[in-house]
Amino acid sequence: MELKRILAKDIRRATEKAVALFGQDVLFVSNSRVNGMTEVIVAVDVAPEPWAEAKDRGDGERFGQVLQQSFKALEKGATASSHEAHDAYAEDEYAQAKSLYDARRQQAKKQAEKSERSERSENLDTETSAQNEHRDYIRGREIVDLVRDELAAIRKEFKLAQRVAAWQSETPANTAVRPLVTALAEASIPVSLRTLLVDHINTMSSLDEATDALRLHLTKSIGEHWAKLPQRGVHAIAGPAGSGKTLMVARLARAAAERKGVESVAVISYSDQRAGAWSQIQMLCSQAGVDCLRANDPETLKMLLAELGQRRLVLIDTPGVQVTEKLEQIKTCSPEIQCHLIMPADASSTTVRKYLSGASSEWHSLMVSRMDEATQPWALLQMLCETPVKLSAGSHSPQANEGCQVVTANEIVALALRGLAVEPNLVAAEVVDKDDVTVVSSAHALVNRIEKAAHAS
Image (cartoon, rainbow, N blue to C red; front, side):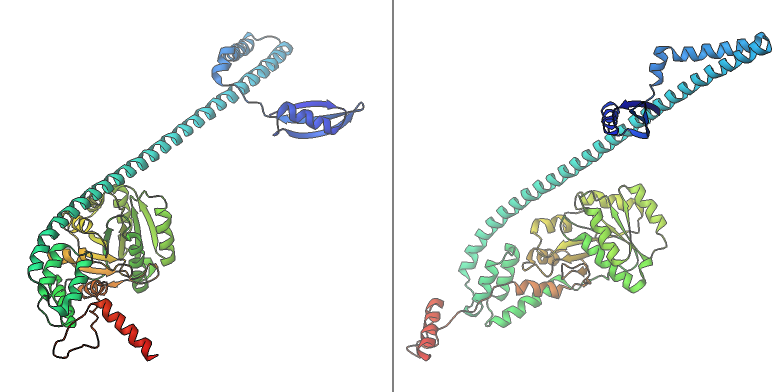
């Protein structure tokens, strides 16, 4: 810090001159009138030069020379007066040189620290950007693979449907169950499952009988396999992106906290790099009143699990990309971790097979989300008929504060049957000849009813 003196005619001009010379950050110390002029004293920051520049200018050598001269003066044993004068001069020079040296050394140290912080920040930004790009690349590859698998499945279904259509045309269904057969044909049911269902109800004589037979057949094929909701231990919730993992974790944590207390439950977000994912789970956990922690690698997760060993229930929220790889990392932390799969009720056949049939992981239970939105859970039903999986939690509302309950096969079958648009055939109320009962088209029957209503009015 250095003091500067400025003279001007008045205080305004002195202020403008100080700002013009030393910038907006100049510090005004005092002002006074001197010989009809305004004197302003300002304090100015003086940036000390780096030690390298001082060395180039010879200040370091000058400091050494002054130091040597001071020692020589002391050793000569001159007279008291000359010795005191020389000693005072030497000490003054020594102090000035040392002060200059310390200031420039401190400045060089600050610049080195600033450069190091800037480099660390740039490296961190570069690393974060690289991680985001890698995550986006992995997610893009998974989407491309999923679309490719979906197209292959559609081609396979189309060829199978062509073969089945010729066989079904040879065995027409009973007139009473044709509306249900038509509804099954129009629903997004896998061809193999639809063929079995149509063959099962083809010869039945009433629509209600056929519907009950479908419900009973599907329920028996799935079987009664169910698991309790996570209540004790460490549980990892995994599934495809957008399946509602975070929301299900929050519901399970809230339900456990209400039963056993908030201090017995904890949630860990593992390696989820999506924008806003951490803030979302923090908000949901704060609403439930449970602790929420974050781990980006297996070492950190293992340390957190050791710290939370006294908790009754620990739930791990996993990302929607590289699901199998992340689960393998989680399992390395503890062999007692139970893995649960969450799947939307209306998931496609390719997605369901990828996680239930093609995955190498053994799922402790299957959780079903979007039960309130889905109307076509036929792909999930087909897989449950083929692969016995324990059913556990189901979500019936998009609200986080709504609880979750154990979902059953009966409930999924009922959801599928409600989604069928079954419309009974409209039959003409009047016939011309009672001995020759003829069923007219639905359009004619509807016209007849409208005409009768008009005449009655």
